[in-house]
Image (cartoon, rainbow, N blue to C red; front, side, top):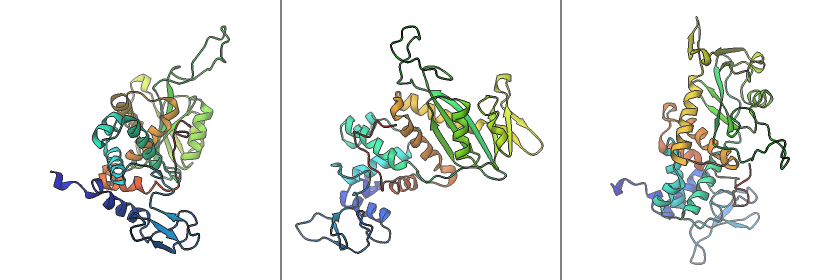
Length: 317
């Protein structure tokens, strides 16, 4: 069985060559100045994979300017961890990862957050469009990190939250047959939900939601807004030219919640946005869209550039 393991997961040199091919398909480019006039440094004085830029004279490797920069973990271990996290439908706990790759729990936890940073897509455009249906819904998960106090006690400002008072609101938008966008909001209000919708869903889309009043006014800004009344036992309605439901986004939340409660079990509010990125990444590259485990791993590796995550930054929202 070991013969079938990809050598990039067991050999650091093979992993480096593979990562170079992913990051620099047309040859090495200096991460300091962007020049492509570089020289591969040979000889005993240099370890494999060191380049020197002939423009700015700085030396670099394939990890410079990426989430892997300055890591003491071998590249083959990084690639294996990336493969495991991108191929696990409901995620993988840091406890499981540290046992599988032979690092401490603290290191595995930090590695996973770096990989999630690579999964983040800063160039994702709005979803939907003419003739397309986008489903929207909200859910509540975990516990808020903001303690609540009585107004009378006056120890801290009273924080009023919409929805379940002790949980974190998450809003999801799903294009049927397409991509998903997931967002953590401090409060699930009409204003916050509208801001997410207008920035991420094209106005010529058809919006499908449940009967929540969060979407009533904003729905008027779209080509159509159709609802199902869950409180009345209605979950799908067949009309002449459309099927009205929010089952797709409910399925997204189902997978997300099973992963968060069954695999991760606990997630602080400060880190929730990165877990949302992880589940969004895998959903948008699911098997039904033609992706394999190897392709998902490659997609994550393409996102490593221009991102750094340190212990100082890891708690930032």
